[in-house]
Each structure stands twice: as structure tokens, then as C-alpha cells.
Length: 161
Image (cartoon, rainbow, N blue to C red; front, side, top):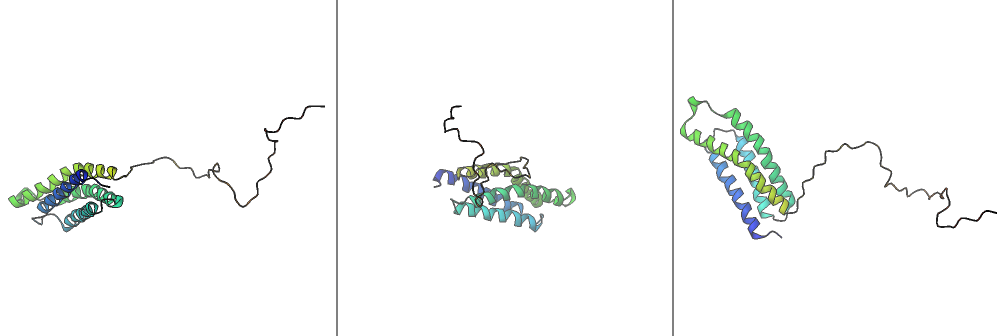
């Protein structure tokens, strides 16, 4: 169901995510929540690779990637060290975390493409729903049908006397 060339596009995304997350977490400058969030999303991505016909796995992976964009921005902005405490290893680690954050929209686009190829359909309905009941499709089954008030149009009209 899932051709090989499309699958081969998805594996490098997870490899890139793994490589950049490991490099971003290597100096323990960012909190554990950064690592747990990103590696959890990576685990869901591996699940999406293994179960090629699962739409739920790819949906959860896409949702996780979108959520980690927000949490990465928060983590990097809060825990970025000042220049006094910024060694070369920390600078490299933060650089990889920022580079990972910059590449996440590309990853989200590729995962969204995989979602669409697996049969997912993104529909967003932001319409105002009415509180009243729509009785046009309602058919009561517990009451007998009332006889029509008007004669049917299929019968010919009687001539006047």
C-alpha cells in the first residue's frame, strides 16, 4: 500500500530529527523536558515508519512535531545561557537545537505530505452551528403517517356538474 520511494523520503526525516536532537541535548544545557518531548515525538515517528498503513501514527507524529516547535521555542528562549557562561560545547549544542527548530517546518511539511499520501484528509470546519434541530431529515418512526390534507395530483379532477 505504501510504495518504496515514498517510504524512502520518510526515513531521512526521522534520521535528521534523531541526529539533531542528540546534538542539541549533548551538553545538558536544556532541561529534561526538551529531551523527553523531542525523543517521544521521534519514537512516534518510528512507529509511523513501522506501521505504514496507520493514519493515526502519522497524525500523532505530525501533531507532536507541531507541538515541539512551540515547546522548543520556549525552552531555547528561557534556558539560553548568557555570554559569560557560553562555552564552545554549549554554543554548539544550542546551535544544533536552533538548527533543529529551523528545520522543523520542513519536517512538518514532509510528514504532512506523507499524511496526505496515506489517505488523510485535513478538513477544518469553523462554521457557526445552530442550536435548533434540523427536522428536514427527521422521520418519526413511532407515529403512523397522517393522511394528506390535499388530494394527490395523480388523480384527475372531477368535472363540475
